[in-house]
Image 1 (cartoon, rainbow, N blue to C red):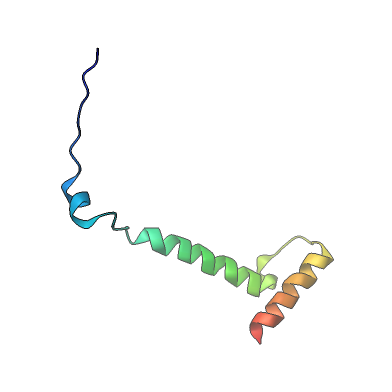
Image 2: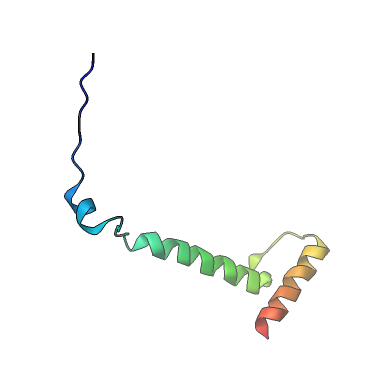
Length: 69
């Protein structure tokens, strides 16, 4: 029969609850990716797409015009 082992909680977890610290890149990288994708959406000429559906192009242009207002 295996004996049960009791683990003690980490002292930092007991002190500050569920608060954890994130490294700087955990926020910077998703923010950078979001800004890059937003820039491509707002200026589709820089995306260098090899043709596309005219309906999708019109939709992106409408969104760009609405955002520019």
